[in-house]
Every structure is written in structure tokens, then in C-alpha cells.
Length: 388
Ligand SMILES: Cc1ncc(COP(=O)(O)O)c(C=O)c1O
Image (cartoon, rainbow, N blue to C red; front, side):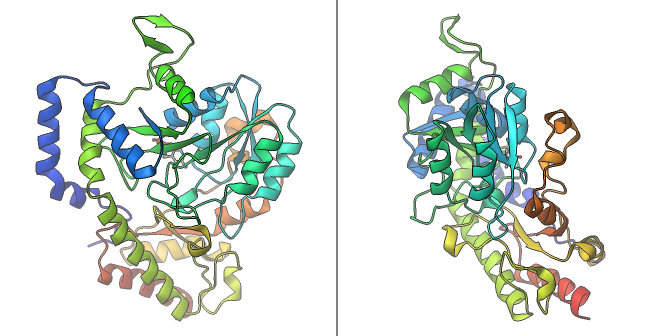
């Protein structure tokens, strides 16, 4: 049996009766878009996050686009984003006619580096927002980024697509409305995954929440009157109903993920790995551990990502593959170098930490169904590769 990166089949098999019951509930009431299931999910998420308003929507990408429009993004406005993220972080800005301004990441946290963000913001004439990403479910510290945004009259939006369940260092939940808007994805492979596409935006501002609700419905408050142009970014009731089933298991899944990460940390340390931010080649086991959760609050370990010497990363992945272990690289290249962003003229920017990370990172299986024997296989295969 392979050690898989994600095991949704096993998760769903255990939930099938409750998922069927939710399906029948929605099919019977025939409210398929919005309605009571969506409202219930929004209020359950709001209670969990400590966010006054949660607006469900069609995907994490919709969430980003809705949030950007709700803070007033106009074509030609600039948004500082980290170059290490899933494409949608920058794609959402670009689709709305905005200009993603790529900044580097902090090598210890792999979150948006405040020094680089400040430099890049200083080059902007129309800065509308700073958009950090809580990458892999770790937490990017917001205070310095908030200061950069506030200084320029810009908004702070969090891409929390991978970070439902994470906590800032002060204990508050990511999404508890400490920024202007926090955007979540419920893509099936996320820690809380729909059986299709879904997302939400959390915010403290009631007017912004109202605007988000309007924008997700073609800019209409109802009755076919349109105050502004939005699109269909609504959330399906079926997805909401299924997410509500899964939400009741979410804490338990988090409790299972973290010890997997903790055990990896312990075993890699015993074998001579180094802390996040150091260079993998400097250690007996040429591996550095993921971002440091203790200094950053609570990590969700959406992904457990180690770093290894760039020259040996692909051979390590091949060796793990042969040992029956699935791995992935999130993400293989900086967004500033994506072909579609070439016209922005940022491809030649030097963002050394992003570029180095893209060559060194490897995600290992960390899902809640992982067994101790699976972890042993992963660690043993890595030790065998580097130390034999
Ligand atoms: C960091 C990040 N931002 C945005 C998104 C977009 O979310 P979705 O796939 O739900 O549109 C994702 C999810 O894939 C993501 O990981």
C-alpha cells in the first residue's frame, strides 16, 4: 500500500451515512443555492473563527476576488503578494485588472517578508492592498504588514485558503477579522474540503459583508436591481450541507494531523535535521524542518513541507516514489516568473528566498489517516536516501 499525500476515500467512507442524510435534506427542501444550509454554515464558521461576518462563496478564488473588490480594487491598482503561493493569489488580482506586485518570502516562515513587502510597496503609486498568504497552514505575522498597508491607506487581506484552524501567536483564530478580510478555500483537498468547489470570506465590517453578499450575486441585493457589477460567486446548498457534516469532525482531524507533524519533527531532529530558515546542507541529515509553529501560533499542517538540498530534491522524490511514498512540490516556481505575468515586467526581479525555496521544498504525507507505520516508512526512506 502506498503512503498517499491525501486520503479522501477513507475520510468519506466513514462519513457516508451523514453525507447521504445531508444530501436528502437538501434534495427534499429544494433550496439548492444559498438558503438555510448556507446561512447555517456561515454562522457556524463565524462562531468558530470569532468573525462577526462570514460570506460563503463559490471557491477560494471567488473569495479573493470578492474581497479585493470589497476593499475598492479598481483596474490599475496594485496589490503586494508573495511570489510563493498557489496561482490564485495573484490570478485573482490580475483577473480584476489589478497588478500583482511580487515580493519575497521570509525563509523561516515562507510567508510574505515584511522587508521585501515594504520595498515593493514603496515602488507602487496605486497600492490598494497587501495580501499575505498563510502558506501550508502556518501563520504569517500580520502586524508589520498591517503597518505597511496602513501607511499607504491600503487594505490588508489574508489569503487563508490553507489555514482554517490556524491561530495567530496571540491565540486568536486566523480569520477572526484582524484584517480587512480573510479568504478561505474549501477545495476538496483542503483540511475542510467540500465535495466540489466552495469558499468563504470572513470580515468584521458589516458594510463590507453586505457588499460581499451583493457582489457574489451579480451585484444585486435582490429583486433584479444591480447597484454594481458582480458575478455568480454563490455557494451551493449541497456543498454547505456537506461542509457542515465535515465541520463536526474538523477539530478531531486537526488533532490527528499535528502529532503526525510532531513525530516527523522529532524523528528528523534525532537524525540530525536543522531548524526552518537554516540551510539543509549544513546538517547531518540535510533536511530543514517546516516553518516554526511555536513562534507563529498554531499551524494546521495543511502541508508538512521540509527543505532539502536543491541538487538532490528530485532524486529524493524518485527514491520516495520507489519506496511507495507520495510527495509533492508546492510550488515549483515563483509566481513572478509565470508566463502569463511576463507583460508585468517582474520576471527578472530577484526574489532569492522564493527562488531557493521552490527548488528545495518537498511536501510529505501528513493527513489525519496516516498511521505510525506510514510515518516510519517516510522517515526511513529519507534517512536511507541521505545517510546510507
Ligand atoms: C493559497 C491559496 N490561495 C487560493 C486558493 C484558491 O482556492 P480555490 O481552489 O478554492 O479557488 C488556493 C487553493 O487551491 C490556495 O491554496
